[in-house]
Amino acid sequence: MTATNDDIEKAVGVLRAGGLVALPTETVYGLGANAEDPAAVGRIFEVKGRPPSHPLIVHIADGEQLGDWVEEVPDTARVLAEAFWPGPLTLVLRRGRRVPLEATGGLETVAVRVPDHPVALALLSAFGGGVTAPSANRFGSVSPTTPQHVRAELGDAVDFVLDGGSCEVGVESTIVDVTSDVPSILRPGGVTAEDIEAVLGYPPAAPSAAPVRVPGQHPSHYAPRARVVLVEPEKVVAEAELAQELGHQVGVFLPAAFADTPVKAHAVVAVPASTAAYARELYGLLRAFDQRGCDLIIASLPAEEGLGAAIANRLRRAAGPRPSDADRATPAARPA
Ligand code: TXA
Ligand code: MG
Image (tube, rainbow, N blue to C red):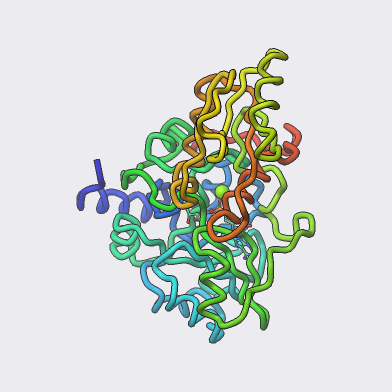
């Protein structure tokens, strides 16, 4: 059931008291705290088990407020904000004084966005300030796209969960660095590179392939418990059946071109025909494979155009080398 006005009021009270609120956005659910309360921001990192050097996104109610949170608003940022906000675009700009270093992982830049979800916007307007929110999952795992995902993963560690139903976009926002002359995409997401180029009149710089330039861009992220292996589309069926024969419990993302091919595997899902539907369902499908006891997921990459770029990025990261256990901070219990 979608959040009521009473729920919004309650959530505002939790934020004002330094607590954590899970909030729906059009991309994924966020784990929100008052951006200007360093202790509350610190709790986000504890609950997520996220290293404190990983910067967060500040969510605001209205693009008009952008200037309150950044040192200056360059023209390109203004143009992109007007074109895409509210929406799945995050702009990285020079940090304004209002933003504590705890929220930026110590960086002198800050990421800001206006989410396109009625419940998030109602919360942000009623609260009046900025809400820093990473995706509401444990560090490195799959982002939640329903309130049930949030509760299953974070349980009592979050003070209040605002219900906004299932997320429409399903993959995170596109992050664009607008601190230099040519905007560059740091993370592909819900707004496509093609959309950005159409607005700018020239292509944004591509995401850097350099290893971990920005904290939080580790190769393994968005990962289910099961190992994810990527193969060519025409090899998905054979690889899945081989692995199943070898004793794995295999989950299969069956490419659309092979939708009618029978597969002997533990769990088989046909890849949704449109990239919008695929993006919307991707994380839920990965979670479902875990729930059904799969230990191996075989998939192929979609064409990397439009939303396909974000889907491919998430699948690659899900398939990436896993951080060692030592690298994963233990989520601490919530202070009373
Ligand atoms: O759609 C989204 O963006 C969701 C919803 C909740 O808004 N949020 C989200 O947050 O995906 P998170 O924390 O899971 O990912 C934020 C990303 C991180 O990869 C981080 O590296 C990048 O934003 N980021 C944040 N601040 C940055 C900065 N100052 N410079 C470069 N990258 C930054
Ligand atoms: Mg995340």
